Amino acid sequence: MHNDSVDRLAKLFLKFPGIGERQARRFAYFILTQQEGYVDSLARALVAARTHANTCARCLRIFEGSVESSGGLCNICSDEHRDQSSIVVVEKSQDIESFNRTDYNGLFFVLNGLIPIVQKDIIAGTNAQKLIDRVRKDTSENVLQEVILAFPVTPNGEHTDSAIRELLSPISLDLTITSLGRGLSTGAELEYADPASLEASLKKRE
Ligand SMILES: [Zn+2]
Image (cartoon, rainbow, N blue to C red):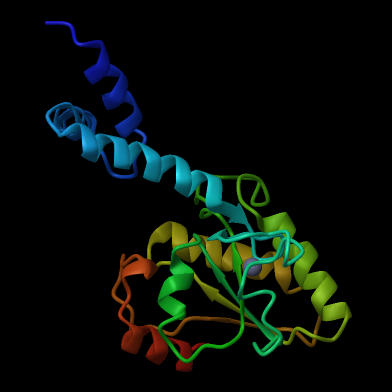
């Protein structure tokens, strides 16, 4: 039997991270068997999430909220009480949530991906150039003192760590570049890190 709706839905679910063909079809059939009310709220929630999502002009994270009142900045970047002298650089927006459960009170930057080991051009494909520009500007204004690299403990994560060090270290002799200390499990996604281990690895940064 040919089923256009299932095919179309499955194709969309296939784009979700970690979802394969079989799971995508399972989700599609799930939708088809749900009550009208559920499907309608799901559709509305999807559209609403998209409408309310904005990218912060400074840290480049996806956040929910208006950009008009804050000049394009998220609630973290527009908070003057936060320590402006340090930036934690993460792979993706949701990693910031883990840091918000710790004592860390500085700023952030979202690289939006990792730099694969096989990639020759280390600037392409992520926000690396925007990070360089921001660090350059913030150090020249004598605001920024430390950049903390917080990538996952995976081969691509470690490669990204050394590539970003290579890009940032020529900017200023006064800038300290550190990485999270060991203590987070190997291969673990930062977004799942528990606050205590994350805080410990922040303290042990080197
Ligand atoms: Zn921001």
